[in-house]
Length: 98
Image (cartoon, rainbow, N blue to C red):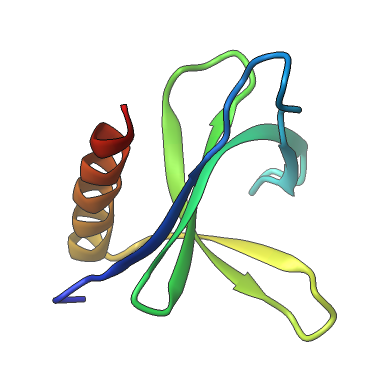
């Protein structure tokens, strides 16, 4: 994943003007998790999302696929090199917005 080009970074604001966006996922134990969507962004042609637990400051980055029927699938990034690269780029983009 070299030569990344950031196409967009949508940070989700948490104040009275913006509604918190919640994503519900089924975890590996089969339990429903409600996660806050912090940001979504594209690098090259891959969409990523930053999700965090409702009462946490720490988030996790997922790659996002969309099925033919429009359902969003959030994938854990298992490739350590890809994950490190995506985290570095996300943090740089977020720092530019602050």
